[in-house]
Image 1 (cartoon, rainbow, N blue to C red):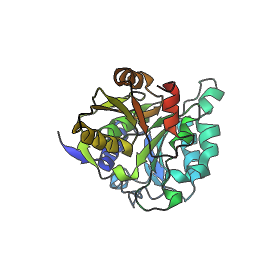
Image 2 (cartoon, rainbow, N blue to C red):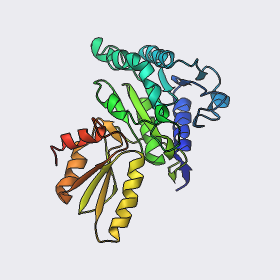
Image 3 (tube, rainbow, N blue to C red):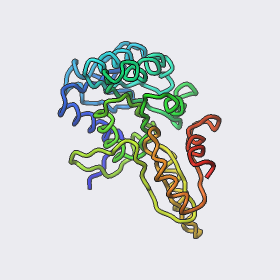
Length: 279
């Protein structure tokens, strides 16, 4: 199978969904001619034009507010926020509008929108450009939260997110954009809410997210040389969380380690531990 980068997989998902459904469009700062801060949308403006790849003012509030309005009227916007740290500027639109509207209107309105945003450190981009804030969004009823770790998952999960009728927060780690992996050329999706066993083992379960999945797999390879068999679980979707796959693994190994990049206090790793009742 061919190998492409994480960024290329995301771009391919966007291109395929835009070709299949003319209601899908992209908006955000520098997503058009410039091709996005990390080059993810490069070439899409030339292919689809200004109407469907829309450069916006430097206003996260305007970007998310526009996406909510467009989704409520039947479009399927994919909004890009340049850094996850800037999502705070648009939290009213996310928490009080996107997440609530379907409930507030008794299911008569759907909000099929995706917000793509980079997370995590590693690029020396300073404190206000390097946070992992995924726990913010999993706290909010009405949002789905996705955090892929591989090119295969990034493409399949983004396609599933775009087709979903609910608002989805799609978190992409900056250090993964250049990582290559096998990705099928044919159309496929990775269902939301389904975890993946990245490596099977019998002595210890590591539940890891995003970039930490790769760190966990490296650690598992080292431990194998010492006779320790490690199973690595990637939730892929933080909400809805696939508790069954995680608990099934822990019942087998009887030991669990949760690895995430975010701060320990109120981080998402604590939610995994809570759902496992302390394992």
